[in-house]
Image (tube, rainbow, N blue to C red; front, side):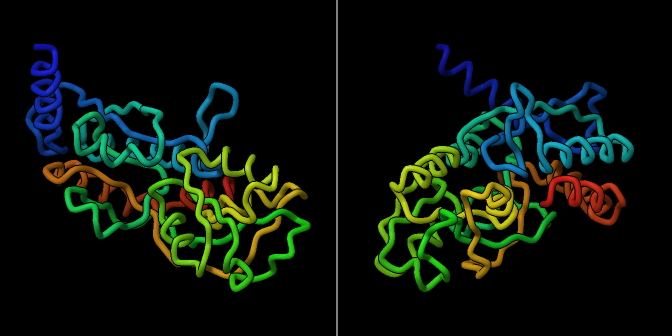
Length: 246
């Protein structure tokens, strides 16, 4: 009985997301899946979640309110690799966590891009690895279900270790358990501020960051896209890019 009720509740939640044109006067709370282990996009500073994506979300919902939408939002912390499945099972409504396009996610809709990015390798500062070619045959770490994992798997003869938490990958790099970690450029640069690490400048993959939702929530995504279009043209966007180095 509990299972049936949960399914019905999830379905009702999904159906209520009618967009700015919806007739309901009640606030619609949008649940957003986020994986706060990917500075400078999203990470925990003590108990507080901070980062570019966090500040961007705040601005997007302000813009949508100005556009006549009646949304509120709440972040739900989860592992990166569970966000897309949680969207498909109606546990959350959006995923905002540095996502890039995946052809195989057939039941997912994507926003317009809000940032350009690329995948690069992070190594220990004293590593002999100097180029992408030097990654061949090495032990490579990447975040599970990310484009970084796909890039790692494309490296010739690489032994790939994929885990959900990037902090675990960095700890493994520190201990010598892996030779490199594949990360978004902004994330790699953030770690490379520490003298223990060095970023390989060559790109493994050029990509774009987007927001994700489940098919059927096109009205919500239309509202997100309108807000994104306004946001990326604003001074606030430039300010946040500079603040977070994203």
